[in-house]
Length: 182
Image (tube, rainbow, N blue to C red; front, top):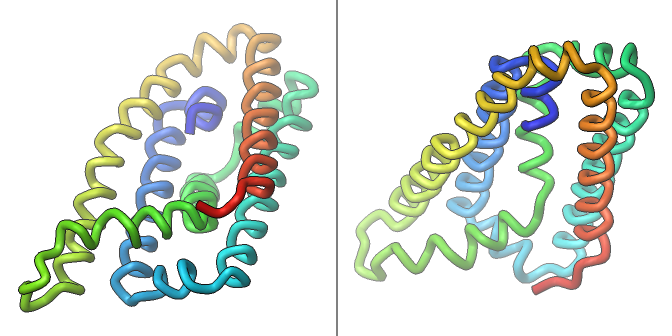
């Protein structure tokens, strides 16, 4: 979100934030349907999602790292379409198994055992969490976008921002891949 906002402007930061929060809605649906329980119970399903998520984050990191190699590459990386930015935000979030486990472990404690519609309440809590996350991520994306013009007028700094963002995503991918379940 930060690198997209900086590289492409406030609109890109906003769209990426929307994608990330849409991914959270996907997690709400997964938890509501009980698929979170499957991931919690199945080491194979959890590992498959974990490694797929790590591979995707690694791919995004390498792409950013390589695009930051020169100012022209940085500008090219910054030209992703808004639908692509939205998809990248959603997919990076949906491929994180720890969020599924968070939803599975955290949200049910707020659903009373006597609830007539526990699934609907669980989904509503997930939607609320997504909305609150959106309220936090939008200002971050917009702030990064506000810095966009300054970074574009200082292309060498932008190159280093892209490199740092790429390395951060690669580090997160490695951490996710090597993290023990728990």
